[in-house]
Image 1 (cartoon, rainbow, N blue to C red):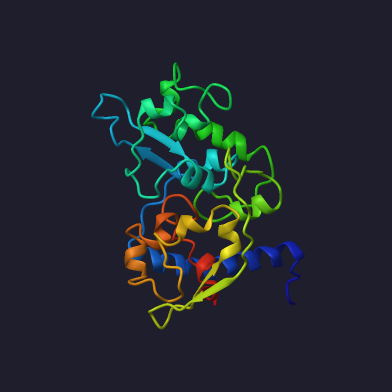
Image 2 (image 1 turned 135 degrees about the vertical axis):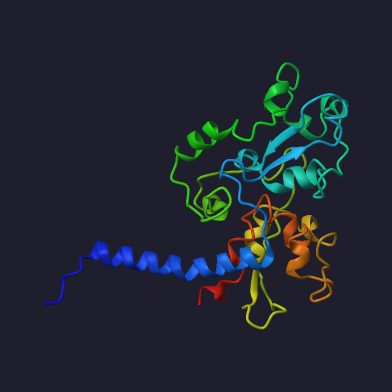
Length: 259
């Protein structure tokens, strides 16, 4: 006699089947492309700033992207406050911060804690120092989940109103809605095309974050645009290695890979 299968069992089997379809793609990508190791969710997006700290006898600064992106869009730091996208290329000094530049635009004792007397809050090399804060923040509201990175789908969180990051500090930047999706053909014949949704990027950044320094404006004129260079931090890899969802999440860029 056939065994009765309840709705919960059916849902569970469907979920497992879905994961099994995605798992080979992610596993294959990890072995083929030698993707960077996955840090813990609270540590993903943490950037070590050590342009001059060690030379000056201080610990490097740990900057947590997940903590700041809840209050500000990417363009606040990378456009208005002039933080370069390339690591180590922004000439941050304590003198500049005290003058209200870079971190000092917010960390002035009014908008956020001042640098004086709070050295350990930034100069902290312990990768787990903010784990408890991370857990407290993400248990406080129903954040949509993602399989990689911080474990949070930031685009959905923004659109559902769970976070309301400010788009600017002092210089008002006019919104330029642009929702065109680009279909990017892969060089390898067995890889489905990648889809670039402009809207998901323009909600966080300005056009000049990517154009023309990272991508040419004119279609199909960006040379050497391939995974090998992306994994070295170029093109999409400027963000999608250590800050935005990582390359492990193949289906987020190549939707057809689920098939």
